[in-house]
Image 1 (tube, rainbow, N blue to C red):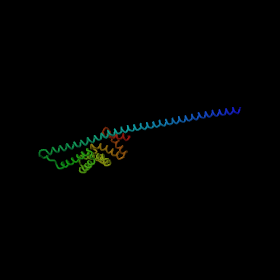
Image 2 (cartoon, rainbow, N blue to C red):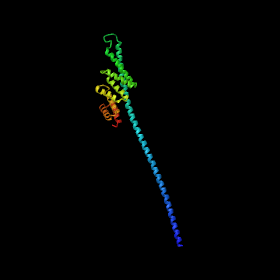
Image 3 (cartoon, rainbow, N blue to C red):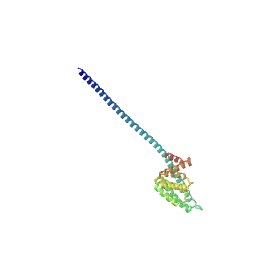
Image 4 (tube, rainbow, N blue to C red):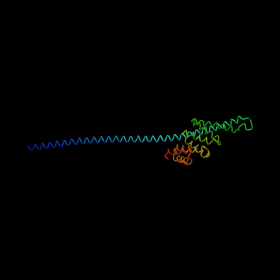
Length: 247
């Protein structure tokens, strides 16, 4: 009888331990599942945060690039307007001189009625110069550069040389031949320091240096313009170039 009681108690104990073990196993599995779910949520949240950060960086970068492009557009627009004003001035001067010579040619015969031979030759040179400027304004930069080279070779003492050199440099610049453009602008700086084209040539030379990858030299040149010619359009453009370069 006693042995039966012992067996019954033993079996009861095993049943209790089995129940406890079963419950513990289920709880562990539930906990593991909950931990796995939490890890998945954390992973999703981390991905969302990374995606949001990347999107924010892209938006900031796009905004900064847009501001830079806007500043660059304004600077380029000012330079283009200045070039157009300069070419218009040159053409108007040429037209005025042609009108004066035409008036003299149609005057009554007299001591000064006829133009001397050198003046007639100069008239042909003026036509060639004006044609080159027209080609430049039309965007025919290769033709304009060839015409201006010929003009410079045949008119070593012409008062148009600073203008011809400047538009020659611009023609090469627009053809992305920055080394030739740089030489044309430097020639103005060396030979025509009192010309109205001196400061514009100084700015374009600095931009050529930048295009050629000579950043330290370009930065130095921009700073010389910004510091030495404050208030001028060229100084403002130089300041913008420096800002775009991080200076």
